[in-house]
Picture: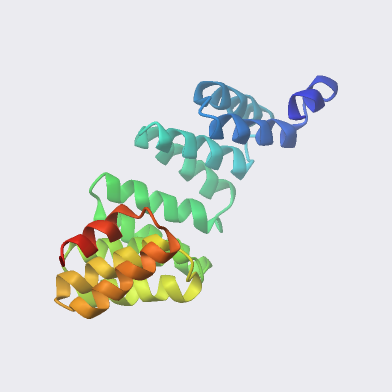
Length: 193
């Protein structure tokens, strides 16, 4: 459909952006990158183009290019809390926890109801053995979106590491109820057998 639209309206940026998303989901990354770069030339301040490119680069484990594109997205739209959250993820991947926390905090200042940012903060606290803080952030993520198995499995890991076995088991079971193949939850429950 989008290819047909582009035949008749080659400068239709929305059709190009949507086609780029479809190509990326199909794993046709190079074609999606090319298409998004063309749109970026036509509409350099379009935040969605930069976010789409960044997401493709993340899938390719090219965090430097992803970082550049997410930064462009935030420059185009300083209220893009998803891009700010994603910059936090990239900085965490690079080992810059302080910078990651800075971006997560900025994201929450814009949208205090974005559960992924709370989950990501919980991950930082879990990895630094600050289990009470991790539990608090995971619970907040769950209170916003109680249907994500990963949030429960992360909460289970924090409980387990804190020695709260009953709560850990319940969290892992909740994770499996929502995501039957959740590896962390399966492993977590397996550790108790």
